[in-house]
Amino acid sequence: MKLAVVFLLAGLMWSQNQPKKGEPVVQPIGFSHRVHAAAGLDCRNCHRNADPGEMMGIAPASACMGCHKTLAAESDGIKRLARHAENKQEVPWARVYAIPSYVYFSHRRHAEAGAKCETCHGPVASRDVLWKENDISMGGCMDCHVRHRARNDCNYCHEPR
Image (tube, rainbow, N blue to C red; front, side, top):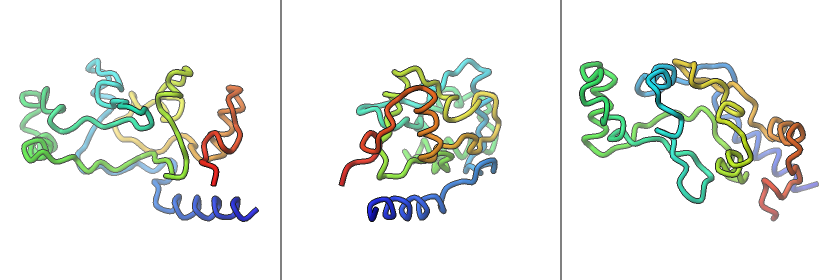
């Protein structure tokens, strides 16, 4: 019982700092997933899944500059991106989705099970601005696991203490 209360309080404190569902997340540099998807880029072109496969990475500014040295190079956003690349700095992108540190989640395991990016993140490829579209709370994840007949016991996502 005490452990359940601890998880509940930790979840409530963590959720206070997360973007609200349906509210566009302001980014330091404008970025349209729709424009990039229309140009033929796939999610994995920018979001790599390095070992051990838990997180999807975000391409460094230098990778973006591979195309943007000439493409839209005079726009204010690309000029800011170029400064990040020149200084070998990461762009401080604002997270749209985040998972608490006390939850184990593997993007790779979900992809191998057939989940698509859209399953959790919504139709990102059609968006100019992103917002939290889907419920990735414990209840939302458990509902999805029930629908797909996946394991749903506590120790599957939470480390036993």
